[in-house]
Structures are given as structure tokens and as C-alpha cells.
Length: 117
Length: 110
Image 1: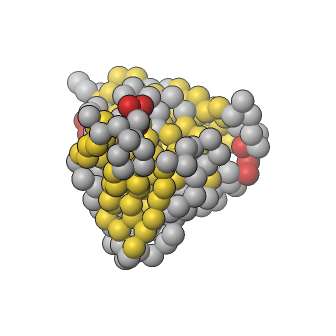
Image 2 (image 1 turned 90 degrees about the vertical axis):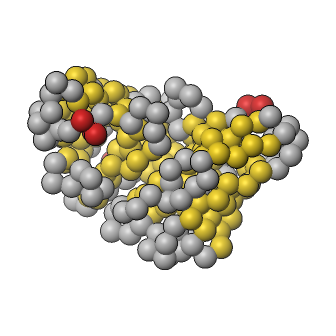
């Protein structure tokens, strides 16, 4: 079964850091672009970041550029999102998703990040 | 990276057809045939319904169709069913390894 499972969410103070992980199974991880997408409580989906199959090409939303870093370990079939200088507005459910022809065809269940003092 | 523009809500009766619009710019929707549409039920992860503007993934009902004209993409759902009630989001590739979502549309089946 093709599956993505996020972890690493939690409560963090403003200005703090958190690293999210996304473990993949059921497909050849190293062949796919991957994305992080977030959804604040009661709000819509927002694309956050993407990374190509070998990890050398990345993209970021302006709202997280310079604070978040996407990376992957193809040997471990795992995607990461390092989040620094967190703000209240980063509070959201964070989803990882597999890219298919510039769309997102497989999604994880999400992990919740809460930024609050 | 401005969000694509979708109507906040649409509604229709069972059996009817509805269309959700998604307006972007010449830098995203208008420049690429890479609009995708997602269905999201409350508390669930999004589900891909349309990719590359008009293609349906395996398993998605042919009641769902997509199109594009200029800077505006559209999702049409025909033969509305109760289970179609959900939030719908469009998304477009925007170049330079970036993507942008629409604000979302809440579909109510009356």
C-alpha cells in the first residue's frame, strides 16, 4: 500500500524550532518530487515547500523562505521539514504529499504544529 | 505567490451540475496546463480529483471534469450526490519549483 506518515508535530514557543518527518512506503521514494502543504485551523490549503527526487532542487512559499528547510533521505525513504523561527501564524496541520505530474496524488494524514507561548 | 481566487461557496441540488471557478494569473494558471483539483471532507486529508487541468486519476468518478480558459480553470461536477459535499481546492504550478492553491470552495448539496 502506498503510504505517507507524518510525525514530529507538537507545541512550540514562538521563535522555536521543530523538525517534521514524513515516512514513505509502498513506492519507489527516490523517483518522486515531494511537497509539504499546510492548513491552519478552519482555513484553506497552502503549499509550503517542494523538493525534487535527488534533493538538489527545492522551492518555498514566500511566507516560509529563509525559515524552513526541506530535505530528504532517499536511503531512509523519509522527507523532512526543518522549521525555525516559528511564528503563531505557522500553526497548522502539516501534510506531506507525493507529486504526480505537478499535482499531489498521495497525502499523509497530517501532523499538527501549534506555535504558542 | 498570491492565492488563486475561488468562490467561497457553491450549492446545488442532487442530480444537478455545478461549476467551481479558479482564477489565477498569466504566471500560473494561464502559463501552464498544470491545474489540479482536490476534494477535502472535514477532518480528512485532501484527495486528488483532477490533474493536468482535465485528467482524472484512476478511481475518480467521471462526474468530475476540469477545463481551462485563459487564466481561469474550472471544475464541473455533474449529477450531484450527497457525498460530493466537501471543500474543493484548485492548485497550479507557478514556475521555479513553486505551486499555489486557491482559497477553497465549500460545496453544499441541498
